[in-house]
Image (cartoon, rainbow, N blue to C red; front, side, top):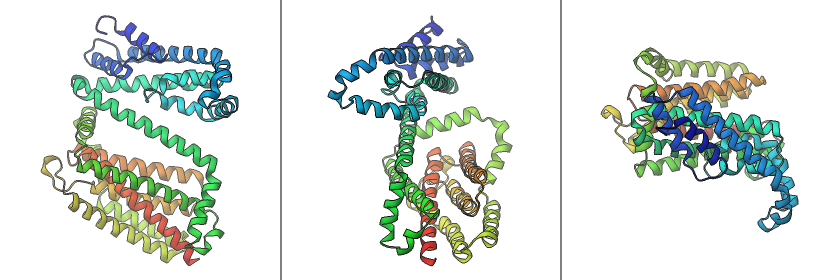
Amino acid sequence: MDQFGYLVLGAALMLELLALPLPGEVLMTYTGLLVFQQKLNWALSILTAGTGASIGMTVSYGIGYKLGIPFFEKYGSRIHLGPDRLAATSRWFERYGNKVIIIAYFIPGIRHFTGYFSGITRLRVRTYRLYAYTGAFIWTGTFISLGKIVGPEWEQFHHSITKYLLLAGILAALLLMAFYLFRKYKIKLNDRIVYWLSKAVKKFSSLGPARFLITASFGLFLALFMLMVGLVQDFLANEFGDFDLVTSYVIHSQFDGNWKPWMNRFADLASSPVLLALTVLSLLWVLYKGRDRMLEGSFLLFVYIGGELWEERLRLYFHRMGPENIANTFPSEQTLITIVIFGFAAYLLIRHTGVAWVRTVSIIVVLACSFLVGLSHVYFNLQYPSDALAGYVFGGVWLSMNVLLLELFRIMNS
């Protein structure tokens, strides 16, 4: 790399995408280190790496396209991928494979065969090129940029960065698969959940739009609850060290002192005046639009007060010392309560409006504000990144549980 940087980079990534066992992520993050040392150019490195990866994906697609179908028609049944299954897989890949291609780059063992399988299943060439080439430059740009960010700490951090990006890629793939299964079986899923809950709530079978809210909140609650259990296990096993070290370093290396005024504004999003004002506005919205005003108003107060008690008891239970010897920072009080208050306000807005863009903007605002609050507290060394992450998860559990309970109470009172 030191002698033939661009040539080695492009050739190695091309060969890796042909399924050769080459350490692509390590090579790209090391390239980022060379960029930091001004031995290589950042833009040219990404262009070279992305081009090499794109060539590898093109060649693997061509091999799969030319040789794949006869092989699977003859031998596919031996590995449970006969003509019928291959045809079904081809239809699925035609519909959803383009999204898988981008995510697959971040998952070793998957990206090496994505091109071959895209050719085997006859994914349209134009569609394949669009997503394969886009994913190639996203993948290479991400790792080279991260290598440039960590700079002199490359040897210490690149293994951790690779691990967390791998986990993020796997999580994204699982979410995509869950979305696909939900889209495919949503009618059956809704009916099944209706059947289960109707045993306890007889009127549930007559529901209309509320079915989706109950299904979504129940699924979100289960997912976040399992994630919460995992976080508690990691906390007890002291597994957050690498995550906190890497994330804190990246944040402080990218946001210097000039960001302080902005970070103060971001932190103010979790201040008591802002949260109280949002609660009052939500209550006024309930009085104006709500059909079950007493029920929704009571839940609004319960969510706010209960959220405060929930985070206080959690922090006292875990009793973690944060940066600068600040006591009881796990989970983050600010990110937890921001998710709860902003999230419930968005739920009430979404529940009583039929405008699609308002719903979308509401969700984006909640996620953005919550992220900025967590970012600001890590920036000021008030909390560890794992504190902020735990706040999101614990707050999400409390929020989704209350949305589910509110919808069930709404049914029983109807």
